[in-house]
Image 1 (tube, rainbow, N blue to C red):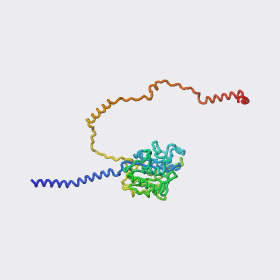
Image 2: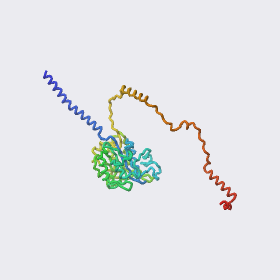
Image 3: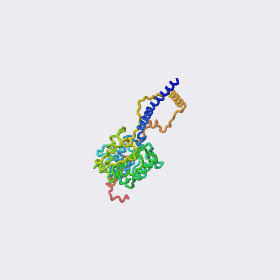
Image 4: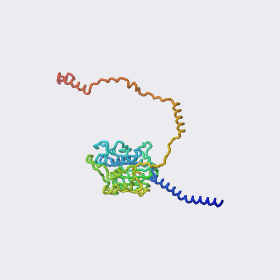
Length: 395
């Protein structure tokens, strides 16, 4: 009898040891699936889009920014998560032959200004100070939500900048400039204050690569339209308005984004190849050494879109409510309605009186020019009767 019990326990232990690897394998698979499901680590997306140039001849910089604005909105980032900064209002410029429009292509088919553009910072509000305050969150308490970057440590942020720049700086309004050191320190403040999870920085300006040379904060990926010592060239000249409509690098980036939809699996490596030197004339650059993930595993929509992560299940979930709870709740609502006094609304306007009253007779006024014509007739009769020689008897 004892031997039988001993053998039974030994068999149970042996089975448990055999099943242990399978249990750990299943747990490992579940962990891998969970890690894949949350592989990007972000729950929300933000975009800060900045045009730093004024004056009509910089039309293309406004068109650049508005085109990126249109693309991120199309891919799902709402206006509440976009901070749009435009240094000049080209849509209302007196030189614009088509007021209230900004076009990014010479065929004039796509108005990127549109009917629902929400500009958060415009004209002289676009300064280096305001830009840095938006990034770091150091803004007055009276600032409205639309002018705030309310990101957190689960936010993926796209920062796009365009304008005139040089080796290590970008001009604002032709009156001040931001340096690559100031920008790097602002990103470090954002990281220390847990204001982003991952950050994508794109700049379209001359010698744009110099602006990301000083970055030192983690989880930043940067792209530029030109290397140090190179100019970033314009594109799409339009003789009708006398200026170029876009810059080359942004034009080909947006052409690439037009093929993207919220479910696209296109990755960042594809974005790096959109504008070779044969098209851009300048040499676009990118920096990924601070970024923890491999760019080929980073989807375009991780920054340009706002795709919510969902899990599809084939299991049937019952949504039948508890009848007892529903009945008691219904009886309680009925009792509350019986005890409540009927609502009465004050008659602020005597609607019935207004509808049934007789129309008021309009006061008669002489038609326009009647008085002037009457005086002219009197003067003509006077001169015809008395002439100019009798004027001295009147005055």
